[in-house]
Image (tube, rainbow, N blue to C red; front, side, top):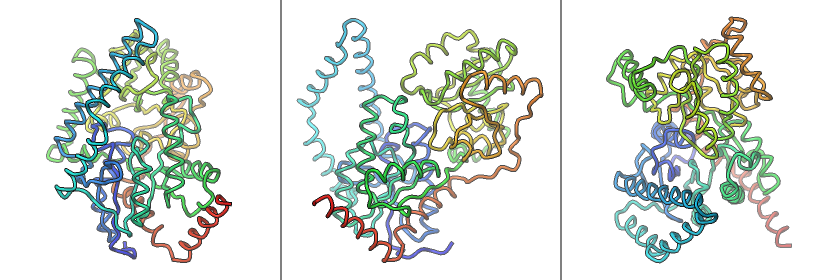
Length: 473
């Protein structure tokens, strides 16, 4: 690929949240893989990529593994662990007296403000990074790429600093679920997300969705909030489907050794060596309402009445608004024999599950992309997915789809598979992007947008000036 104009461009990739947690799922998975492959993309594009974390309006460089130094991660883990413990204490207090949880949390907040005020702590942190030479200053040709879950950051301050320095801003959008499906999130998160979304729509220059569906939804929403944006302000790219960590961790082992190690690790976690996984159906995704695990269990309860030997393995960490679901799984009569929950699957284990399952079942109500679909297809595993527009975009003709209106529709598909009335689609010829291609596509679209002819840039600036004049009037 020929190098684009303005080879001096520097892309600052925000990895703030992913750098401080060890999660290998969802957004953090995307951020780490894009970050890891950005070195290759930078060489292809003739630009410079720098993974960064946000400290207020300042940025600090980190490594291409998308992680902070070990001491910072340790401190962050200790703080997060302490806070989680306090929330559990507060939740327990509420069972004895109504409102006790809020009283306890307010007390902790006041205690923290008294002994650990944020302003001097932030000043000390900024001085440390400045003196150690890790702090990055914006240049007027920089592109700040909001790649991570930046709604958890004081993003207004950061974007103002970038704009004042003449930098451009590109934002990656994963979905608009808190806006379009507020029932799947706590109200506090929904408010934070909507506020963040309105800020980035106002101040970003370019948006890249992780699917065409997300890009169109964002364009429709943005048109109601900010009319200086046009169709050229939005793009989309396709996520990768390979397992970079799997390659790195096991590159010196044979495939048979990898499989044997992965199987024994999974069996030890799930079965303690007492039962064997065999011809299992696989479900991958965080346990949260929109992933629709309740419908999945309803369908399998019907299915187990006829086929008690069928196995279902759910791989996903425990998320939010899922207490009833967890209780249902933990107390299910099939747990440990035909039903299994794997909360902490590694890339190595997940790769083995995709290559040895009977089919992936993906009953999600709404997604930004549906990464497990392409991961399964890439590994040759048939997919049974809910019939939604995004799943059709991602899976195309390579998946078997079912209607979400009732669990019976899914159980009917499973019964038809068991009786050979339905042959699942085998994705023998399925081709998709790896993370290297995905990263290159993303960064190419970002750099190309800001390499457009000056006339186009002037048109956009004129639209923005006109809008400001109307607001002033």
